View 1 (cartoon, helix red, strand yellow):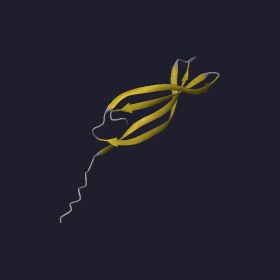
View 2 (cartoon, rainbow, N blue to C red):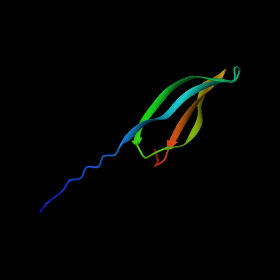
View 3 (cartoon, helix red, strand yellow):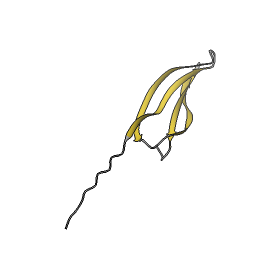
View 4 (cartoon, rainbow, N blue to C red):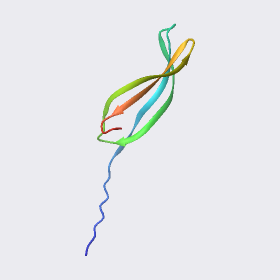
Length: 74
C-alpha cells in the first residue's frame, strides 16, 4: 500500500485590514491616522470594499475606524 502526502503551497500576502483616524470638523481635516492592523490572506484574494464606523471622539473631533474587506471573506 502506498500512501502519498500532498502539501499544497498557497501564496499569501499581507494587507491592511483596518485603521483609525480622527476627523476635525473645524479644520475639515482627517488626521492622526493610527491603529493599523494587517492580515495575511491568500494571494488570489483581492480588495472588495470597505466599511467605516464612528467609534468615539471628543468635543472637537470624531474618531472613525475603517475596515477593508477582501474577496473570500477576508
